[in-house]
Amino acid sequence: MQNDSITITGGKPLHGTVEIRGAKNSVSKIMVASLLTEDNCVLRNVPSIRDVKIVSEMISVLGGTVEQVDKTTYNLNAKNLKLVDPEKLRSVDKKSRIPILFAGPLLARMGEAYVPELGGCEIGKRPVDFHLLALEQLGAKIEHVEKGFHIRAKKLIGSKIKLPYPSVGATEQVLLAAVLALGTTELSGAAIEPEIIDLISVLQKMGAIISVDTDRLITIVGVKELKGFDHTPIPDRLEAASWAIAAAVTNGKIFVKNARQAELMTFLNNFRLVGGEFEIKNDGISFWRGKKLSPINIETNVYPGFATDWQQPFSILLTQTPGVSIIHETVYENRFDYVVALNKMGANIKVHENCLGGSMCRFGSLHHIHSAVITGPTKFHGEEIVIPDLRAGFAYVIAALAAEGKTILKNISLIERGYENFLEKLQDLNAEVE
Ligand code: EPU
Image 1 (cartoon, rainbow, N blue to C red):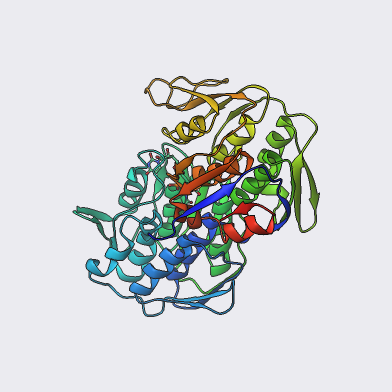
Image 2: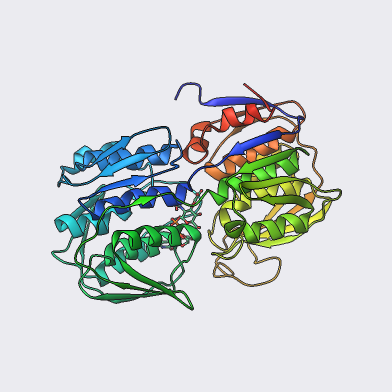
């Protein structure tokens, strides 16, 4: 791809305001939910990011329409949904993980679904076995083909499903499949991330009956049909945290418009523990660095724990902190490859197979590198770096902003998957970016 690199000259504190929009990991799933009805659906405050474009493309190929009515509002309509030749979906092959979530709505509407090859960030094996098992338990027949899956079911039937791990995607899969199934589905071991609750809110607006009970139990009473919705998704808590860290690392101050305390509670606690300061206002949160940074131990976890997608940017803050900090990654088995480039820029990060920092996790004895010991403070120096995935990409941007000299970052289109207009935002905050 042309012009897929930027040069950042570090050393300038970031100051100003950035506005965040609907959460990437909410918006894309809500777009899929629009296929559950023939009615018109309205989605507001949609970010202009690549994941939205990929899902729009898949909906259009399947006969639906995605019409952008203004900068951030979309009308979605799937009245004319149709079965298409899988070859027509080759353009979305390996681009995202969202296509697997089309299964439930397509089965409900047409009794058949084709899921093209899945993609998404390479941060572990990321299998879809929980998705497929859940669909089978609801009565679907799955055929693995060379490039994807064919899934068939005349009618899905409610069932009792237990997830081995509270997977976000598998929980969304069950919600989107069970909502129009015959009878009731009880999902135990469900994920309860804010983006999932947002999806449930949309489904409730559409006419679904879904209860979120104690101990990760979600009960879905199947209904005959669903109607359209008008929805404004929750703001992106992952992007909000990324800008908070950029403010603290560069010793600047950023007001993140639309950032909301509720979904950021765990992040805010850890940000404060390490020495970050923040002020919560009605329309957003201001972030900056306090007088002194102190090392901490962090363990990523499912919600309400410390989100794995905060891990990579947060590691940059820990490189600026005097002393030894530990990150124990418990969601993905392989999310520390990105530290090699940080060490090249001057960081002192050592990775380990053991569960460090406190508790044991499911990766404990499996020889996955999933703990990191970060010794700071680091004075980064500019390097030429290739971005491997979305969150690592933004972490490198933050490191580059604090580095001495110029850093060339290649593959920046990966960042555009989840951060709207991030180059313009950086420039508005006074960063030196070419
Ligand atoms: N897993 C399985 N089998 C499955 C599904 C998941 O073993 O069938 C494992 C995964 O390999 C992983 C863990 O369960 O180790 C959690 O995966 P999960 O299904 O929760 O993740 P996901 O739905 O694929 C979403 C977000 C990710 C975010 C995770 C965890 C979207 C599009 N992606 O992925 O976001 O890290 O939940 O919160 O919603 C990002 O935004 O950069 C990003 C990677």
